[in-house]
Image (cartoon, rainbow over all chains, first blue to last red; front, side):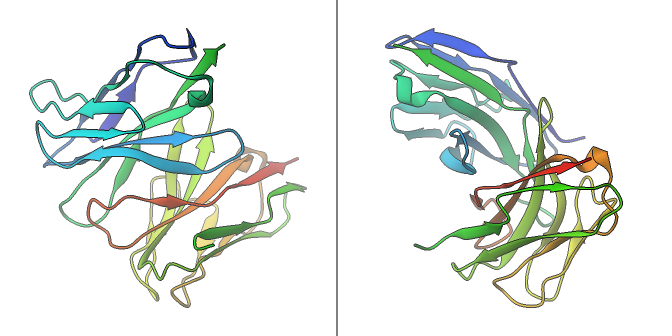
Length: 113
Length: 113
């Protein structure tokens, strides 16, 4: 079946540290891949996306590359800030046969000053 | 401000009671969705609607019903609430149904006692 697996949290980092949150997927067909971020007390909002193999999505210093050979879409940021503390969700949307967006379980990030 | 409005923000409900969660969007998006968010499980799709007048079942539809009488509104009804329906509920929308990003409301925290 189709699924998204992301690293368990919480992840705790000091400010300016390098961030990696791993995400791998299983899907039939050719999915689009997304990272969403959820700040405390809010709904999810799109952080970045990639729609085909080798595409790199980027936003606010975050990056993720669509790796078809390893079925991965790892999220990275070179220098995190306290304001990046949030829950991050990896997701895929299948582009064939109608709608389906599948989310990973989420990874909570704490950034200490 | 354009977006998705959910009501109520939070609710405590006795088991066996009927409850309707409201969702309204003003972006004229075709598709709308209801998700529940549970710790360690991420977001799971309850029901969706690709366009006004149509609805479909998601991953966890049992105990819930929806209607889509018009483009803007997509209420979620729990006919007889049970404690396992304690969760945070998010309404979302997208312009289309293929690989589109989702826009989320701020959520409804529901506790069934």
